[in-house]
Length: 540
Image 1 (cartoon, one colour):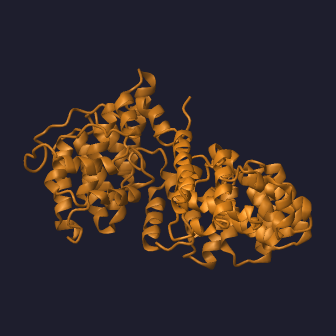
Image 2 (image 1 turned 30 degrees about the horizontal axis):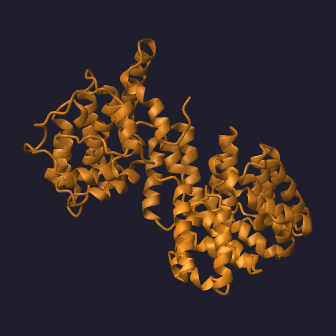
Image 3 (image 1 turned 120 degrees about the horizontal axis):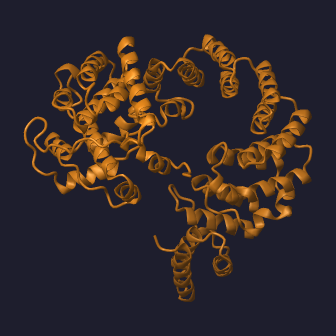
């Protein structure tokens, strides 16, 4: 991508030229582009002021329309502030920060001016801050926190000017803890709870204590919140999560069960309970039931990450495991496909990735292959294309080329799951093709097909008994082959597998990993560093 400063300079040059010609709308368009590239560049703000002086404030040149360009929104925010209406401009700036939190939208003098904190109505500022908190994450990613600090400075000034405003203190506490200021979060939350005791004040206080790792005080505050409103089951789930995170799993499950006793369908309690039960005994059925609940309740109150958290970094549940594996045999499977067409390769490149949140998410992502014909998908499986020319593809090609091949075959097999989905599973084309691939050999194509079948069992309860029986046979047949470890991991990811078969698969995994620990590093372990990079975690 082009350097943002160079892009901003080019837009500024064109904006100046348009302004000289009197073409105000063209000047505004280029100024919006310059702001999007370099939000705090002084030259941009100087030219924006000139435009405002010549165009009666210029607000009409930066209209708020549906799906408005972010540069237009931010430019309008600055013009409103310059016109003496910063309280109207601030929500627009906050909307931009929620859209792209890592960009320094707020790093301008008027946001950090103490006069703004004194001027704004405290209740309105509290609402704006709470709106920001809902969009930046809890906690906000460290990489983007610096760009959000001007908002915290604004709240400091407002709290100084309005020290008795409990809502402002609570909202400020929520922002402070998200931005890595736990001590300040506790200070403001304590003051707010003393000024105006309430359920919300205790929740803010409980979260602030938790961010400061003061767990007993956190739990005490959250329990007081329950006393204010025993029907707010989200607090029960928060208490359960906090207890579990600090080693008190039995107590955590008791709180989750209390919530479920009041409402068995309450999404936060259901997600928390299944996650905690999986942590307690490692039984995959908890995750499968959670996936079923998510499928049957698409309108949950908010997005949950419990299933993804439980599947994270587990082979086949969230990633393609690295491994050597024999080269693909071009004559495998039904028929003898020709080389895949460029259009099929392009569609595969759009969706294929070695990581996914959980099996149902991988199934949904593979919908992009629904327009690829079965013969083309078989060609992609037999003749995996080169990695795409993008950041992920280049990383795979450089560090683990074999992983890309396995990844491509796995996603092409997932594509087969989207063929003729109106057909009942038992007699379907998708079952016939995948079963043929999964049973015709002991190479990585069989692994990829088994993965797709396991995924089918996650998303289609009618397929579970059939897939479990097939995986059981394959586990026995591959015991002496190089793919034994991977097939065993697939078995551990299979819904409704018999307990004795799951135990056998766990023994295969354990024996193989013990053997690996005693000898030289096995190829499948070479992808650990790459996997951390792909998932956004730092490598050492």
